[in-house]
Image (cartoon, rainbow, N blue to C red; front, top):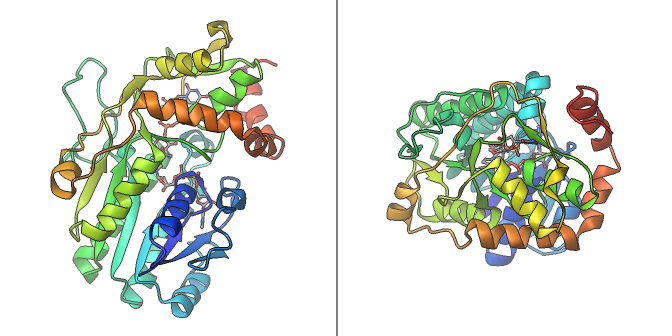
Length: 344
Ligand code: NAD
Ligand code: TDX
């Protein structure tokens, strides 16, 4: 099988490419990534010389480039990870989210129809379902939960999902969609909660917790997500959506305190800052469908996964220090210091 992976230099995409290249030497993995601020070829150094791996730099929204690539490579399968993925950035600048997440996806869909792709898999998110109230722990997102988005990010992801479904119904494109909960693990860009808190705590810097810190996220170790997508590609039913999550709900405050304890730093580093606009209260996935129909079960729980993750960041300081020394510094200044959320 020749698999075109988009966004394979980002956090989840790179974990997926690393996993697939090693796990399936019989398959060819073509990685296409624009290398935005979030894309990093360092994440792929273990596979870059493997015979079943190839990299292209390009934009999923660039029609000419995408059609030429499909003509040249003739992939069997497309797995679309490429996206603008950070909610806070979507509140600052929504239009790039429409450009990449919606237009980029429809460009890939057009090429997939033209070149008779055998499977188009869209990597979506639980955020398309909106949020759940904190006082109803009995409620979970199922595949039947209506789309009800809160942020420009989740709206762009939901729009993309609707186009993916429309291309199945209208043009008969064989698609699958997965909606996963919050991922964590190696190679996550340090703008996201867990790596941000690890990097700042180790440097004795203040940890900015939005609002009251009671918002709940359902955390999944990234490799469990990658394995679920691999399973959906091989055994998933065309036209179906699968929710992916492992029942690991934690408040943000619990996550931050876990990080502080693991790196032996005081809770006095926590600083409560202005809340995110439109901040979703709780995400929680019901994974019954993927468990019952495909036999997927996560291998990590939050305690084992977070321990591995923190250790990876401690062992790979160069990886995130390189990132923090670049453009990201300007981002932190603009989003946290200039807005008066964190003083330094
Ligand atoms: P990320 O921001 O770390 O990586 C995104 C990658 O896409 C980067 O390598 C970037 O260079 C690339 N990219 C961006 N725009 C592009 C374009 N126009 N053309 C080609 N490449 C482009 O994101 P992530 O956290 O790895 O998320 C990957 C996917 O998984 C996204 O679609 C996201 O919506 C989805 N998802 C993420 C999570 C999570 O917790 N991180 C959970 C569920 C779903
Ligand atoms: O500085 C912070 N302080 C804070 O309290 C940051 C960056 C985050 N938070 C809170 C906001 C959220 O409640 O932590 C929680 C997690 O925040 P993010 O890491 O930004 O993730 P989230 O907004 O939940 O979205 C993530 O999961 C779903 C990914 O970024 C998305 O791409 C994915 O679809």
